[in-house]
Length: 380
Image (cartoon, rainbow, N blue to C red; front, side, top):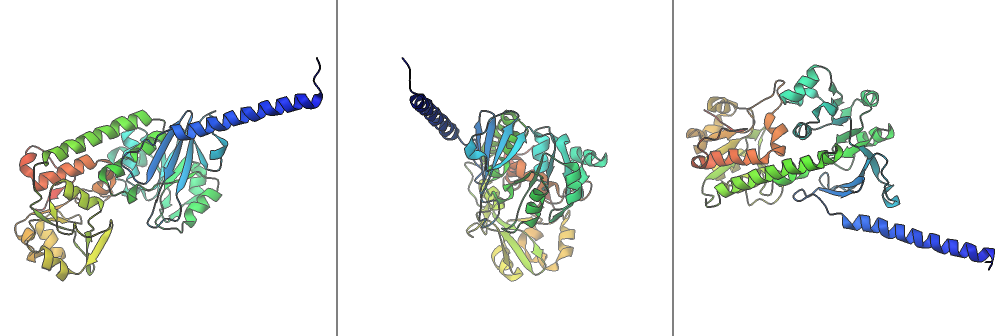
């Protein structure tokens, strides 16, 4: 029995249509089955699929007018057509340029620091391990965050440049992309949850094919943080705390929903500005600070001071605070790297468990009698 040619075409077209529908359903299934592997970070989402991952970076700077999506693609893997419009990055990476010192610990924790080929203003890096790579020329100084050395970056041709923006005007990022360089925006600095900030470790796990290692390492940080919380679970926040120092003619205190304020809350301390809404800092006059915090039990000072006298020399009015007179003043910024970088700013975001223990040691020393500060230092 013979079929007319048009009938054969119809059957073939119908079968092709069914096949397309199956592929579409398959793509939809892939898109909907995966779960976000991020639990604490509000600005990051990672969806893992067979051969590729989808990374979403949300609200990467204040009042951001767009979010960013990236596809991390393994070699020879097939990515659905619906994702072709997004920036694709082949993983695992072999080379990378990062632009914030907070990224350095993520690389080191995962053991991929040797993949770092460039960093802006390398003197800011404090880690001894990465400083050795800088000293032997493995990590190049690629300018400043605001003005990266484009020619040098093109010469280095890293697999990826991870950078950040501070507002909706980012000409440098556009110029990097126009030069054919792969660029990823990172927004870890916007996180206010201590564990949320540290969970960006998982992004680097995805970039270097070390997802399992990153999860295990992060889970251990969560475990340590929760164990520290248990230490103070029966404590009441009785000790009052002053935070910050004068900068020019203003005193900047951390707002009540900020990363810093969360640590003091978790350590069961009564931070005097905990009721101020917001996540940034609030600039106040010295008179305003003195009126509210003159009798504060503790003072967490900002700045690389090492002694009470050094702090007092910077501003004679500091002696009016009771915490100054009783020498109950601490700072997290006195420990510096070989080139003057502040170790706390580099390492603390990735190790909130250690930061919390430092705060607990300050406010409730009896709970950690043998613990040695990681970042904090008492001014004597």
